[in-house]
Image (cartoon, rainbow, N blue to C red):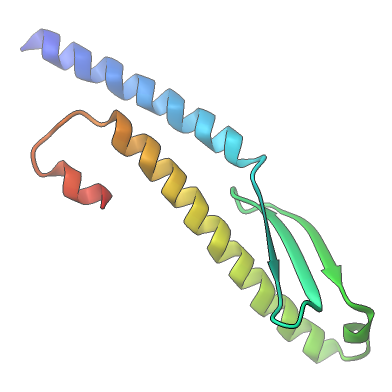
Length: 108
């Protein structure tokens, strides 16, 4: 029994290291989100760090419209990055979890 516990602890430590490595890798994964009419483009990492925002000159004339575009596009970019981040980390965590009855339903 004690050997099983040590094995599980080792596997959990290995999984933790894989999660940290995945988080570091996600810093280099970039996603691009554009407004529906391509007037704004946002580049964001899967760790939700904004790297670049491109704004079409036509939006510079209307501050309120620009703000609306930024909010919509940034929210979409953050949501997409969050989805990628969570999926990647969940896959690594699920892979490294010991086989405990009932726990598999938590990662579906």
